[in-house]
Length: 303
Length: 314
Image (cartoon, chains in turn brown, green):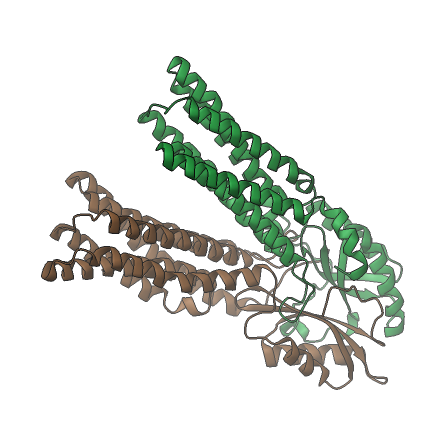
């Protein structure tokens, strides 16, 4: 029976395991603080605690989704998902990007409301709450900072926590300014500034995840460069029907038709192309169709 | 899509771009009218309904945008073309549909716990107008909904909006005549349940396509059997089948030919491609794999199974 199994995932497993551990710690810490805030909000009848708890809740959601996606992604490939489950992480990252958009939009909306109807600015108690929340977020960000560059999924959760951190910073900073200057308009302005600051990074995350979901050429790879490298392999007369796409943010796939030079041995050429793809571009999954002449059965789908 | 397939594709689409634009325009006009009416009459529910219709227009606009993007030919950024954009749009619209369903439940419970008197028969009348508009839009779009996940998701937004208007009419009448506030809760919950059911039922297929999963379990076995049965094929392995978009599949496979020459393989490829056409597999990459030269490829290309080893089947 044909197997869609890959056993070349050892390197990925190490990174995924490390990411999962960091996410678990961040999730545990944030959930603990969320529970503390909820209890405190009920005991002290504090609206401030409750509203900060809402922010922490979005962090918990983002972290939980990212972690769940990694767990799902670690499953080996099978007949139903012949490329494995790693693309689930991209879906999670896309979901977190959308969630972040909604959160940023809501922050902007609240900021505008507060310009029209200024709220009484916070008490010392509220500042303490925001301060501890800030510390929790900073710790989580530290935990996730290694993974966020290699994994869009971790990045999604990281951005959610980062946005929350900015929010706490804004609350504390704004309150400090108001304490000394009485400029109450600072509060909504800061809120709006944060909302606007968060949007560009969210947009980038959404663009990157959509690109992978659309099966576009992976970031950092150039179709032309790959094509000319393959064409440079001994025994290759022509390269066509070249496709490059990604399963997730760090695995690229390739499929290509290679027309052979007259005396070339097709097994040797096939192995040589696979070697050069792995060595030059870290493409470890390639399907190489070798043929005598450039095939006439072009499907019209490819550049 | 190839040039000659262009008009074929339009017939397949079921609803023209012009109709979609009209549907968006109609919804935007209704939204504007409801906002003006809401501001003039001070009716919050009119404004809320206006936002519902705006999200409707948004869903349709997204579907239209995705469809236009989807027609672009393949290029150096998207080697398989852009048709997948419609599946991403469907995912977004289905997700928002589910979120709206959940929000409806929250709203219904909130209105039940804090009942507000209805401003009068004007609310029912406006809901009636909105219902007519929603039905018109739904009729405009329905043809495309059968053939396209993308259009269907936008269509479901429309349907849920029409149902919401029906709900306002029914519950509004019962409240104005009999003070039956519980009718609002019941009607809205029923509508929310329907909306959630529709959204959730389409999500698995959409996500499956985006995940790069095999389109269908049964079909995968059939495909493998067909491949094995092609004349000249001794064995196959390393098979990948996935959906490029809703209607097109791609396949990669290593074929072990009975005869070792590359020339014989050419004929084999032709036969394989023909055999695969009935599964809508329009893109296939077939790698000739001679069993004896497997060597130490295991690090470069995913290892081939040594023999028919049993593997995890879910």
